[in-house]
Length: 486
Ligand code: GLN
Image (cartoon, rainbow, N blue to C red; front, side, top):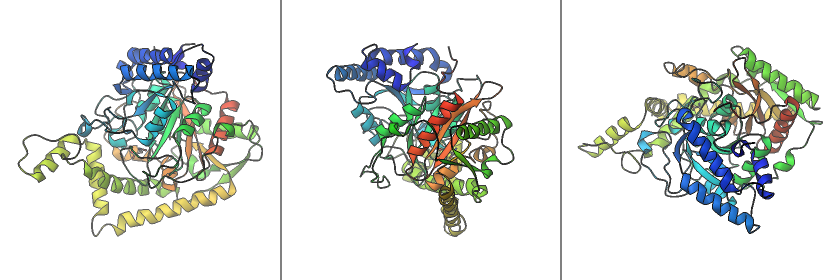
């Protein structure tokens, strides 16, 4: 077995037994990046020297008997998270030359555990998108089928894990950006509960929705990476002071006593037949594992897309005001006045989709429209949250598709932003409700593209998600499969 296709669990076992070293493991990932990333464009920055240095340090720690989980495990990081001394472009020209002056909280935790940071990976500009095509520094390609999107916005994260360049990755999820690319690329992705993971050092998109989370090769690895990044952090006022359970201990066999809900609104018209079939196989698998299957309705689902795109753009317009040509990154040349600096730097630095969202969001927040748009959307958000609260009185977790179709060819959504917004319909409700959600590989389309299954649970109930995912994996027999790249 080549080292770079190992799961975290396998690699840790092999390192603990002295069969492989962190340096060998890291070198095999770097070799794979060298071989395939010219075509796949998952990485924006590769830190070969730094990674090998961290791997040597991890090997030394292990020799001293000080290895903790993740020690010596090579990971990639979405370019929206700050890693001290490395670029953090957010996929945008406006941050092209920005070097992060500090580590994000999750990076501090990974470094403390001894993980190896291979580099920073591609994403839609400021995490706004569903295909990673708005990235200013190369567009990641789906490693399962040439010419197809990887999904987004954490497209580089998903590709790097699927294509055996990194054992795991950290992404961010505001409306599906971890789960959707995970589903389209055949890896496992989790958006933890809002407040579970500190966002200190995560460049903000929409602060009431953003969460950091893992993209991994299977459920056991997801439990390990989640364990490493969770916990209260006083530098993020939304991070909750909650006990962090032992997530690996949650991965027990059998679903007896669990009630799994099937939300009928997620199986509505317009859903691809193959995607629906995979989700149905998932439901059967959980029933076979002993779960009771119950029908659920989330009546406010039809309003999700409208609510999300009002709230997310409104928050983005405010968050992105800081990129003004003065504080961070790009400043336009030849400016005559301060206003000129703002106008030219923002016009030239931001891409079309980001500008569209800033305009939309500014409009929704403007005097006279605030009540009609932002306030109304916030009220409907509460109704959506109440739907989930009611649902989790009837069941422990929900099962559904993640996306409405498998990956599609590059360019197909470009002229119609609304069609792309609508494609987020199955993932954004979890962010609006603040609940944890996961995408687990469920099957393949006739054309060989992966299809995921989504699981959602109540606040701070990541354990039932992981347990359900683990049982799906066992029953369906679809664990980690490396994408067939050279
Ligand atoms: N596709 C959604 C959007 O464009 C979600 C993005 C995300 O989760 N960051 O906003």
